[in-house]
Length: 461
Image (cartoon, rainbow, N blue to C red; front, side, top):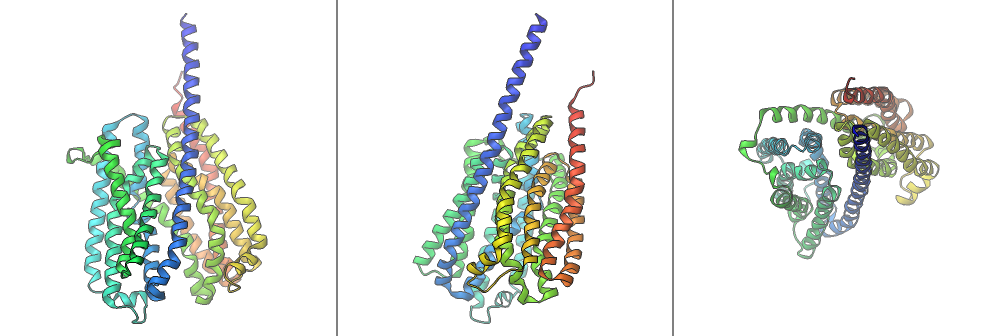
């Protein structure tokens, strides 16, 4: 009888494991689809907004608006990795059904991000009055100094508010709620676009256009927080009594690792136009930027999909389901290669014609540049699954070390190769550095890491 009960329990456990596995795949898939859909909504609103703002403001003020809008990418660095650190911590405590620790981590993260926002705000207030913003934007005197200064101040206020408010999206991500994770940012893009329409109808000045663009995400993030803490998960409300030194230290440690990982990737990739300008001259930058935008579309969507699947992988690792994590990593890599390969090969073959059609014949691309970008795009299908499994497994020290080394070598190699072979060298420098200092070491490290985690979960007999 005991044996029968034991076998029945095993069968029940297998059924539960299978159900959880299916649910995890469902959440990861839904998260990937939601993330890509939100990105498409954002791109569409930008696509429609550009001619609208250009017509209403003119080229000089449009340049200021576009410059400020592009600075929102700094949000991923200004939080010093705290938001991403919180995601990993929430997945772990959710697997343990530990609401108290979850509330402590959320309280610590909000405190840290509020402190960062206050510090950055104080620095900006000190700098703002002393800077001639028309000189910063190089408007040539066609825009009043007060208008440029006010537009910058509006952007700074919204940017600083989004630092703590953006944490609510990461809470949804940590709890594997894909629809909530990406629906709110998509709503922010739509609210921002509605604000632009209202500003255009009212013949508003530049600061109002900036307020509409950056204020929409602030409003929806605030509403997200009200719904999340007021109705969905009230036990997460930040309270002074929930502040713990251990949580602050853990968040700070993980945050610095994430900050190094993210900033290293940005240095490796976004330094390309600067390197090309310094080595080949400013006129050559468009020969880099135009094909980059063409080739980067699918890798960016793949990046979004992989990040959406991150909590599911993290949950599997935390629960000791390493076999599931291995299968998910293998499937993600195969899917990434399948999605990126054919379009990338098509761009390599027909990219020059596509660029000339897109730019009205102004910009083309040499075969060497197309091949270099093709190699980088194909490599991204391997890079991103490895990136995610390292983060999910908590191998942040290894990840940060390899990322920093990759970035340093990438800059030096890109400068050298750009001087030797031209624009293609700036791309090859990144691709070769990623291959040698990230893909190859990680391909050796990850299987060993997963085997070690699997052994740690097997009780000794």
